[in-house]
Amino acid sequence: MDANKPRRYHIKTFGCQMNEYDSDRVAALLEEHHFTRAESAQSADIILLNTCSVRQKAADKIYSELGRLKKLKRDNPRLLIGVGGCLAQHEPARLLKQFPCIDLIFGTQALARLPGLLHAAAAGTRSVDVDPDACRTMYARLPRPVIGPGRTSAFVSIMQGCNNYCTYCIVPYVRGTEWSRTPDEVLEEVRLLIDSGVRDITLLGQNVNSYGKTLSPPIAFAELLGRLNSLAGLARLRFITSHPRDLSDGLIACFAGLDKLCEHIHLPLQSGSDRILQAMNRSYTAAQYGALIDKLRAARPDISITSDIIVGFPGETEQDFINTRDFIARIGFDDLFIFHYTDREGTRACRMPGKIDYAVKIQRLRELNALQRGISRQRNELLVGSIQEVLFEGPSSRNSANLAGRTRSNKVVNCPARQDMQGRTAPVLIEKAGIHSLSGTLFQEQDSP
Ligand code: SAH
Ligand code: SF4
Ligand code: F3S
Image 1: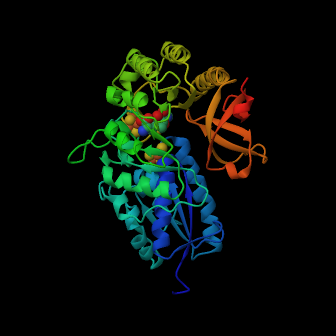
Image 2 (image 1 turned 180 degrees about the vertical axis):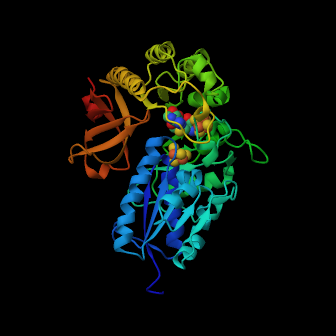
Image 3 (image 1 turned 135 degrees about the horizontal axis):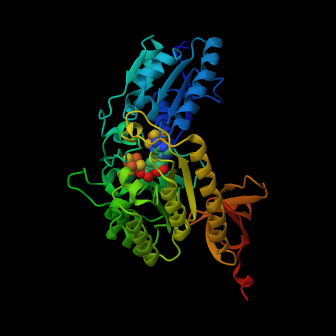
């Protein structure tokens, strides 16, 4: 091996679970090409940023990171800097212009071509690969994901892209139009993960309900879930994210019928005002969303429901905001991710009139966060005294004598337990509830009265 060739890589991942998954696949590819993982960014010859562009804050984080890397490169001119993922796909020209330290840009569909791009960059060619539809079999071309020892849960990307074009959202432009992996490819990957000790699988897609529509023959998402549910060795199955528009009765029935499908759904609402939902191109009303929640709770009474909300969408009046606030209180979500609207260049909302003042957006954000903290605590308190099946994932960040795990409903539980319980499930008696987590003790049969 040529000792002068850059060989040690470091990947820094921003954004959602799909980026985490993609970074793991990229790492497996680089290792197959004899690159080795660097201990730290400082000791690396190649630094790759896997970026996010969904909100302005996500983009700002990348700009600051690139500002820091610029200095690192000044000290080590041989360092190669690559920027990939959604921001790279969104604004390659701007990044190249603003940050001369960047050696290569790889878009969301370019992962399998990364080794070639790296070799070109090492030879002094600044390369850019951002064709959004360039590889719809990308994952099939990458080596199998490598799972480190002790991992109990893993992500599996099953589809990507989005055809929904919500007016505020950049994702359809940076992840392209929807495409799905074949069911056989997904099943094979899940089997492999089970063989490596994984028990809890989360299927990923920007819009998982549309899974399989582009395949020939097409297959429904509910059917894929059914096939995965029958895999021996798998304990838990989850998915993110669903759009309320195509949450079919078939999929709702899966929550009643599939024993491994966990009782949790993340179903982004975005707003409780019909006027704003329409301006967002969400294609449902608050009442229709409420009806879906009723159906889900009828299918699985203990289902936990989480959601995303945007406050301060262009034109959002005080009354629209009150409608959202009241609707949130009525549904009683287990948890909410609340964002203040930011413009993303290229989207329809970016060109809409009626932009809301930053101070008003932040005021609304704070109000909803305060409301939800109370609701989350109440929802969690309902579990005090119950026995929950917990899958232990690793040491608790709060107390090293404890293990942390998750319930099937995706709530974090801290519990005193031996290290060898890691990777195993056990019944836990829930004794205390906080806003974001629960704590309890291992339940033994003789404890029962
Ligand atoms: N595919 C998923 C997630 C998309 S991005 C879905 O459809 O739900 C995650 C969340 O970011 C969105 O649900 C939305 O609440 C938020 N978001 C997207 N674009 C935004 C923008 N321009 N400003 C503020 N929040 C935004
Ligand atoms: Fe964005 Fe809407 Fe697609 Fe979600 S469904 S990725 S919010 S366009
Ligand atoms: Fe961000 Fe791309 Fe995910 S924009 S949220 S990393 S799909």
